[in-house]
Structure formats: structure tokens, C-alpha cells
Amino acid sequence: MSSITSFFSRPTHGEVWRLAWPIILSNSSVPLLGAVDTAVVGHLPEAHYIGSVAIGALMFSFLYWGFGFLRMGTTGFIAQATGRQDANEVRSVLARAVLLSLILSLVVLIFQPLVLWIALDFIEGSAAVEAGAAEYFSIRIWSAPAVLINYGLMGFFIGTKNTKATLVVQIFMNGLNIILDLLFVIGLGWAVSGVAAATAIAEISALLLGLYLVRRQLRLLGGKWQKAAILSVNKMLRLLSVNLDIFIRTILLIFAFAYFTAEAASKGDVTLAAIAILMNFMHFMAYGLDGFAFATEGMVGAALGAKQPKQLREIVVVSSFWALVVATIYALVYWIFGPSIINLLTSIPEVRAHANEFLPWLIVAPLISIWSYQMDGIFIGAVQSKEMRNGMIISFITYMIAIHIFDDFWGPDGLWAALMLYMAVRGVTLALVYPRVERAATA
Image (cartoon, rainbow, N blue to C red; front, top):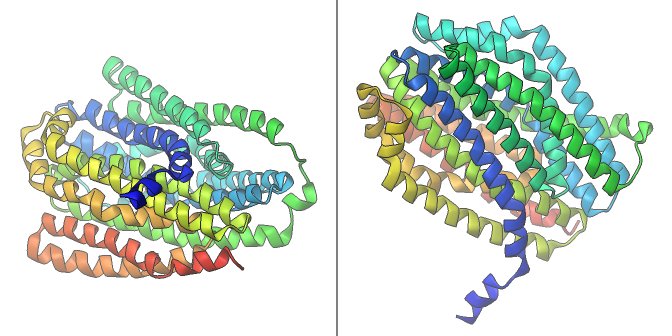
């Protein structure tokens, strides 16, 4: 009993929750936005509207999540510089991230027709679904620079343990997006184009707010902008090396989910719509559980920067414990309220029935997936990107083999079984090499 009391009396519990709850709230608003997107078109008369928004959003998930290294790489480097109390390097890392974001966003805008062609060629939906997805893409793509720069800003906030700023920006962006969704789709009848326009406007507005908050925090942080440090070839190459590893890891992650959706699309509009409904459950879970992973990133990075191995281990244990508790709560909520949530998201009887058939997979998903999110947070904070890349390659190969075998035996249920196996292997591959993180704290 005394050991249990000792465990819960550790101050690390309070630190984990102080950093995690803003991320949990802000992240939870992201799938809420996706749910509203789905709901506003889910009550239109045809199922293809749901599919169009799902495919359109998936294209941007693939595109933007591929650039997620702009946040993850920034977080790790800034957290470690913060642990060393090096304000000048914190500013330099942020400047490099913003510079890289500007360059990459320009490339995205130049090659947008090619990106759209590849995406639609890969995901074979009906003609109506593909036309709606192309309309969505052609509008939302113009907010790409705002999205990529914001990734760097979020990495700065998390790395400096200012997770409340991420809450403010995310809630503002998603709240505005929801309001514009209702105005453009329900009020003005713009359907798919209304959803895309609402998202683009909200993303640009969020960047302006993020820049204001960064400017205010830098005044308190101190330090100076140093052109030579910002443009340091060695540090830029180190950033690019880490970002390349995370890019490969993220592309494989997104491709896995894209392939999952593509396989669902090949089974008809109703199956695609049902899986699109249930992917909102996955998104709610992912963004919520990521709150502890994000908190872990900043804390692990600071502990490594300060060379505190005992503090590192305590951070890992405490944050993982609370992540498991929250994952269990997600599973219970999906078990009790899952059918009601499905009914809120669509009024189409066939889609509701199909979604309820797959619901058991979503109930077990949080308990299987939690370890992959937590290990990601630990390795991002430690800036051990090669281990993340290698673990993802192993997990992805396992998933691609499984999805073809399971689909042959179980049909759509086989898709879900393969996805659960994929999430489990992601956690296991990183857990096996975790001792390298602890060794880095003593090096």
C-alpha cells in the first residue's frame, strides 16, 4: 500500500497532467471538427457526399502528416535546448523550422496538380466521390503555407512546455472551422466546397494567432536571433537528417491508413461511408492519447538535455500509466455510447447498420494503440529518429502482408484486424530498443 501511495505522490504526476491536459483538449477538438464535417454532409441525401469529404480530408492527411516532421523534429531539438537553458538555440531551431516550412509549402503549391492526380489515381472511388474530392482539394490547398508553418510553431510550444498555447491555437482554429462549416454548408448550401473553404480560412487564421503567441513568448524567453547559427550548415543537415527519418516513418504511417481507406472504397460507397464514420472514432482516440505523447516529448527532451536519467525514467513510467488509464476510458465510452455516436454522425440506415457491425474493433483499439503513441512521444523527445524509422518499416511490412491475408478470409473485418496488428507492432518495435533512450541520458 505504501508503494502505491509513494507512486501517486510523485510530483511528476502533476507535471504530466499540467502539460497533457491542454494537448488532450486541443487535440480532441480536431476529430470533433472531422465529426462536424462528416455530420454536415452526412445529413445530405446521398452517401457520396460523405465519401467526397472523407477522401478529400484523407488527401490532406497524407500530404500534411507527411510534413509532420516539421513539428516533431522541432519539438525534440527545442526541448533539449530548453533543458540546456540555451535561449539562442531555441530561437535558431524555430527559425530553421519556419524557413524549411516556407520552402516546402512553395513546392506543394507548385506541384498541386500532380499531387491531386496521384491521390485520385490511388484511391478508386465512384465518379461522384472523386469529383467532390477534387473540388475539396482545389480549395483547401491554398492554406498549405499556413499549415506547415504552424507545425513549426506547435513544435516550439510543446518543446518549451507551453502546451496551453497549442490549446488556444487549436481551439480557435477548430471552433472557427465549425462555425464556418455550419454557415457555408447548412446556411449557404455549398456542400463539399463549403467544408473545404471553412477549413482553409480557419487554418490561415490560426497561423496569425500562433505567430502572435510565439512573439509574446520569445520576449519572455530572451536570447537573440543569430543569423550564423540559424543558417549553420551542420545544424541544418542534422535537422534535415532527423526530418528525413521522421518523414519516411510518417509517410508509411499515412500510407497504411490511406491503403485501408482505398481498400474500403473498393467495396462500395456504403462500406466506405461506414468506415469513414468509424474513422472519426479512431481520430478522437488518436488525438486524445497523443496528449500524453506530446507531454512526454517535451519532458523527455528536457531531461535528456539536462542529463537526468532518473527523471527520464520517472517521466516515462508516470506518463505511460496515465495514458493507459485514458485509453481504458476511451474503450468504455465507445462500448457504451458507440451506437449513439454513429447515429449522430449519419442518418442513412444502411451506413448506420454497417458501422455498427465494425464497432467492436473500435472498442479494443485504444487499448491496443496506446503503446505506439507513447513510444513515439519518448523517441521524438529523445530525437532518436532512426529507431522510429526502422520500427515503422517493420510494422508497415507486417501490416501489408496481414491486410491481404486477413481481407481474403474476413472481408472488411479483415481490414480492421490488420490495422490493429499494425498498431500493436508499432509499439513493440520501439519498446524493444527503448534502453537506447536511457543510455543517451548518461552519455
